[in-house]
Image (cartoon, rainbow, N blue to C red; front, side, top):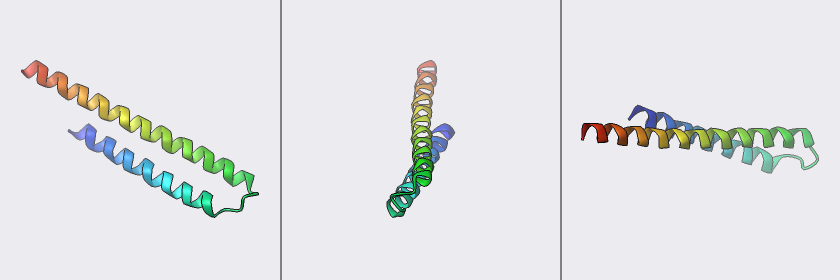
Length: 72
C-alpha cells in the first residue's frame, strides 16, 4: 500500500535526523546554550515526525482491514 511506503520513508527520515542531531550534540561545546536549544527543538521535530509516521501506518493498516472486510 502506498501510504505504508510513505510512512516508512517518514520513519527513515526521522531516524536520520535524530542521528544527525545526536552526533552534532555529542560533538559540540557544552557551554553553547543556543546550539543545545536548537538541537532540542530538532529532536522534538524528529520525534513528532516519527509519531506522525507511526499513526499513518496504523491508519493505513486499519483502512486495508476495512477494505478486506468489505470485500470479504
